[in-house]
Length: 204
Ligand SMILES: [Zn+2]
Image (cartoon, rainbow, N blue to C red; front, side):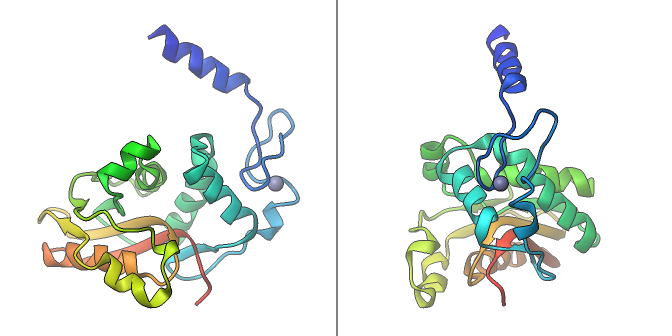
């Protein structure tokens, strides 16, 4: 118990850093720094921002550098986009990673980003309904033409007739093959509407 309190105190004392360039911010400041913030480019569609520049750096730092301290900033961007663009849904679901990858990384990067979205929309986050049943090579490592095949049959979903309108949340969207496969699993299990929201995407 006191260890958790001590870690909480250390977090308070650690200076906030810009998620984009890792620059230490002035006391009381938060978010992307003055140089990075203007470089974030909004998108109108299912991806909130253009994947590139400081945002791409921030996502890489978060996922591969295990910088979970960036979750509040990245989550806030997603929550803002959700409030602005997502209509009525019954539940938020993160595109799941395979349990083996979650274990290796030490945290579920999708779930951490989906939590603030569920809170912003005031609906539950369901962590059990959609599962990744096949561990697949990362989409980014494959040519675009192989991505759809790579995630085919990778997801399974459980029926929930009380919550048929789903918002599916992911970090990065490139071809959309992953969200398409995950959405298909949800539709097969009785969802009537699956919307998608990703933090960053390539411009269509
Ligand atoms: Zn910066």
